[in-house]
Structure formats: C-alpha cells, structure tokens
Length: 348
Image 1 (cartoon, rainbow, N blue to C red):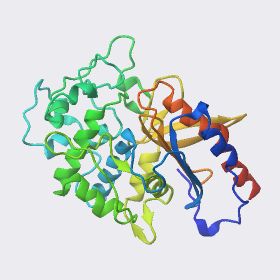
Image 2: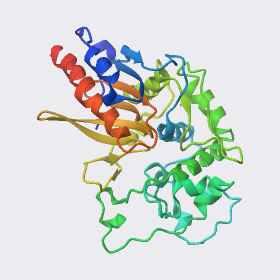
Image 3: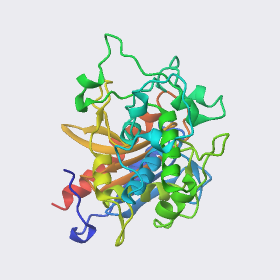
C-alpha cells in the first residue's frame, strides 16, 4: 500500500536550496531543458525557466499526455461509465476490424492502461505493424489500432503467463489513442471537453492545447500542451489521492492502482508500469527511492516521489535525442533529489 502524509501533519522544513540544480541546468551538459518546477507538500518551493516562454508558456510534453488520458479514464470509472474490465469493443461498436480474432474482442480498458494488450504494437520496434509512425500515415487512428493482428511470442520472448504480474509490456501509442476514444464514447463528451470540465477545471487550469487526429479525435497519446505549473498540479493530484480541497475528482482506488506496479518492463533497468505511469528507481549512494513518472519524448518528465512528498517537473525540447531522458533524469537524481532528501532528513 502507498502511504501519503497530509500537509497539516508536517513540521517546519528547512529553506530549499536548488541553486546547484538550476546552475547545472544552464550548462551544456543539460542543454535543451526549458523549465524546472519543484513542489513539496503541495507547494512550489522552487522554479526556473531557461527559455523565453516563462511560467505562462504552453509546453509540448509529448507522451506525458498518456498519463492524462489514464486519469480521464479513472474519472469516467468513478462516474460508473466504464470499468477496468470493460471490453473496449463494447464502446466501439461501429468498427469491423481487420484480422478478426476472438482474443481481440476480449481486450479491456486495463489492457490499454498497462500497455499490455495482445495487439502487435510496439513503438520501440520500427518493424512493428503497430508502430505509431505508421498510424500517423492514415486517417482513422482508432481503426488502425483495432485492425492490428494478435502479437506472437518467439521462443526467446517471455509470454504474458510467464511474466511478473501476468502481463507482457509493449509500448503502444495507438492503444492510448484508442483509450481516448473509449472514454469519449463512455462519457458522451469530446475528450478535450471532458478533460476541461472534470480534470483541468477543478485544478484551476484554463489553458490546454490538444493535438487532433485527421478525424478530429483529441490525441490522447501525445502532444498535449500545458504549462509547467499545470503539470505540477497533475502530479500533485496523485500524491493527494485524487482530491482537490474537499472534492474527490479521481477515485482513490484508481490512484492506488495507477501508482502500483501492474506490469514489469523487461529491459534490465528495474522499471515497471502502473496505469499509464512509469515506476522507476533512482539511486543516490547506497539509497534507492522509487518515483512515478509521466514521461514524454524530449526528456519531458513529471516525477512524483511519495517518500519526499514531492513533484518535480522538467520540460525539455531534446526531441528524438537518444540521451534526452537520461539527461533529465540525471538532473533530477544528481541535483534535485539530494536536496529533497536533505529537507526530509532535516525534519526528523
């Protein structure tokens, strides 16, 4: 079980000092980083902007959008409009997919939330039939996902039934796009309107810019533009168990499931995945802490760290660079996390 502490139970904290982090972010080693916002106990304790946009700029955070789509699915579930085990085809009845297979009819909302459906879809593999770059070439992105054949498992691959948590991870943007359509059909609202009414509005967010498919579906898989402070508010919602003040806008059990490992990522780094949320270890000396991350191409990150009750937003424009994520993670691990842990230790 995850443990959360309320701000009212906290003792006075030492003054924050993130100057070393901000000085580092200005160097060539961290070129491309555009903003850093650090929150602890629900308050911004430090922020800096390294481009001309400043605090009001909307920043394209790429696949961090996927976590937002997962949050919207959670809100719809709290309304009783869908459930984790809802079969997605029940909410997409107008499609007659290619490559018919009875197993495709069993794909659930939770399969899409955990990147573990049986579709042959892998954005990390340029040869995958479901690679997102192929999706962008056609008009109907949901139809693209539904048409995909069932994934096969070669002898050297781990099958779902042999995997930790009983699922096999395969990163699939088309699946999250389809989840957005499922949420639309479940709620009877356009995804962007549902997001504004039920998520952004209660958080006091007025500015959000969505990308859209050729058929007008809000792109739930990437490209949503938000301010860095808004990203911090989204991360804080996980630490606050889905509450904004006295209002429960996301179900508490959905927050719990989102932040709990649901599928292992077999890449040797110890990463796991919740509900469209990465679970990642960070090591500092002989100490390892785990964070939950909203991740986007270019090194964009919202790092939610329950132990330090912190949310760190790092935005960047290192799109397509192989070290983009490593660069942002190094800034966090080497410069920001030590200060968060220092403040935590000083209270004890």
